[in-house]
Length: 335
Image (cartoon, rainbow, N blue to C red):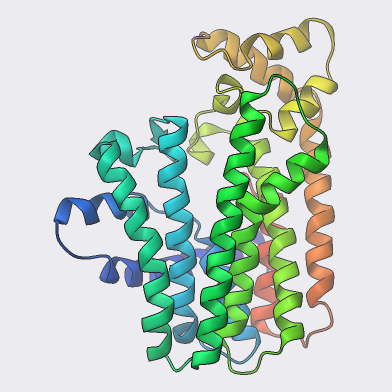
């Protein structure tokens, strides 16, 4: 399956999941629910729900059985985005105003809380309606809660890294993205397996490892695109991580790979929120010329190879091939 085909599959699954979520996120006051769906209606890859669906299908489940868990993971992801944007005081996300800029901070916090609470409701109530047994639902809720804890811990580590003047060793960065990002990819695959009728504990462990390594690769490439990506493609403000002083691994690697004036251009704008666009553009160009794209994608590829090895022994199937293609997409993507 090539990149174009996997994108088509992602879009089809995203539409199904989004329609289901929007049918569930309704209530009073209306403004609260409009705020909670603000990012959901603006589109997105919905990669995490896709992993839920295909992991479920790989073990004899159906897309219908996977839908509550797929929606739950997407809601937790959106909950984290809403609260992250408040903490970072960001104005835009993927080309649309952030929730707190559109609806105010107080309502944005409540919108995030609605998303968080609804995720647990979807698994415990809607999951049961699809025929998932009580034991599996209990395990799913426990895994969802644990993943949420990891996401919060990862965000706290990220805040600590950003507030410190120095860069940190690669293992600390990897620990942070494993918790903040990869935890939800791990969760996606394990919830998918638990939604299916034919899974074992070994299957859950294998697919969890698959998801975790794909998630690490995803964040590595995401941080890369945050400083080198085309904003018309990514929907992100290029160089925003530099301006905010975020000490991502790609920025650290670019500083290590440059010297003289090129390094000074990068350091001059790191954390300088009032920097002008010309200086920011020059710093971004220095990073793009430093050769980090090849290096970061190679590290990401090594994690994808680890992921693929965990499902290599399973029988060939359309769902397995979809998971393999999704993993390759994570490394090769430009958005």
